[in-house]
Length: 470
Image 1 (cartoon, rainbow, N blue to C red):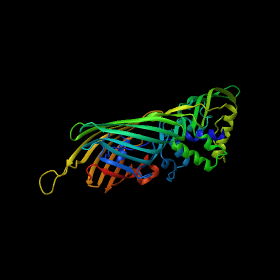
Image 2 (cartoon, rainbow, N blue to C red):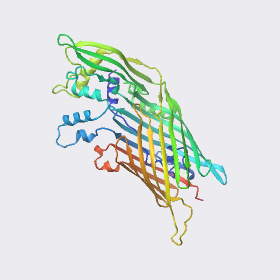
Image 3 (tube, rainbow, N blue to C red):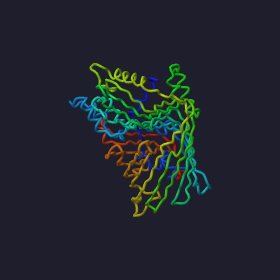
Image 4 (cartoon, one colour):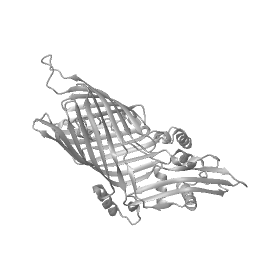
């Protein structure tokens, strides 16, 4: 029980999301199909280097940064902490996402003169975590309730989720004609670990009672749902047993779910293209190793002392929270169940409008060189992901340039939930049939990583057999 409460308190302080705007639109990179299964395909077949074909990690925070609180600037730490707490909103969040492609591949098929269909397949592991800033909890922990008589603290500010999954997928892409292509991808999800507390309600208020007593009133509807956690945190579980359990779940021995992606690409003219996709339309059913904790009901009691006192002189943070934990265990009956539940995947949307220009001309004559397509492209991209409180969105403008036969570059400027000055850069290098790509966001804030609102990095190696090669 003690572990569960500590875990609940820890989870309500963090969150993360993903940002892949730099990769979106790099059609010569097979992994771009993961963002739009209906995108243009420019290779006959490919396979990804196992565990190296796509590595992605991103972290972001929409409110105060680590630097705001811990900067060595001569300002008292308590002052900076107070400023951070009061400057953030309950909808602010910290976010992080990680993906590792385990294997991937794809091949075109059709008639000998028109291979207009494409099958892609693969498996990847993903970690996703999001938590909103629990503002009223933070104020209550920082100030206590003695100076907040008659103030209702919103228990619904606690909202967070974390998961680790593996995904096996197969995609189908068809080029209907020169102007239009579409695609669909089926997915099987295997849950490795899931923790969620996203539908909390209620409040806490302290009122003056009689004879200098306080009336402490709780009206709570709180729930923490976990799947795959209980057996890993069991005191009898050793490291070997944990490793075996995680491996089994990653290979579809855990709770399973189904989902799909859809997408399209349409050339409005020779130079204008519009495309879009919806990803992760699906669910996971959790029934194995489930342990849920729920507090529901109204509780009222009188006391001479506030239940959330200010931190005492010489008292450590652990001692302070242990004291509050003991009070809560004495007050509330935590209902522990193994009831199965369903989690819906966070649906993602991508859409873009692109304009290509700059055909390559021969130096020997005033004429176009062989048909290699346009050298430049500009466009705008809209990205959105469904989150527990509200959707996260990002709007990106980009410039794409084919520098040489084996080198492409893309520069982006993104306005998102984190900042209005996110500059990204992507490079794709082709050496023979080997492709390497490296992409990163938010270069402006790299000069002080502790003050950065978000950072994102992607890289990968693939072997690609292009359509124009013998």
